Length: 71
Image (cartoon, rainbow, N blue to C red; front, side, top):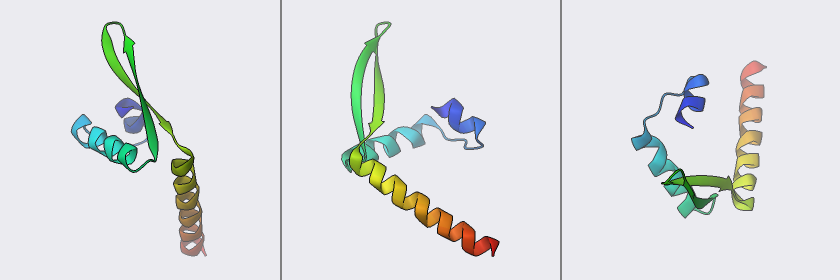
C-alpha cells in the first residue's frame, strides 16, 4: 500500500499509515480480515457500506470545490 501511495506522490511511513487505518476501522469505515500468508499474519482492509457513503460524500465535496476553483 505504501508503494502504491508513493507512485501517486504520497510519501507516508508505516507509522503514519497504520494508525490511520486503525482509526478508520474503529469508526466503521473499514473492516479488517487477518490472514496467515507464508507464516505471517497479513491484514486485509475492505471498505464498509458506511465507508463507501463517506467516500462518495467526500468525492462530491471535492468536485464542488474543484469546480468553484476552475470557474
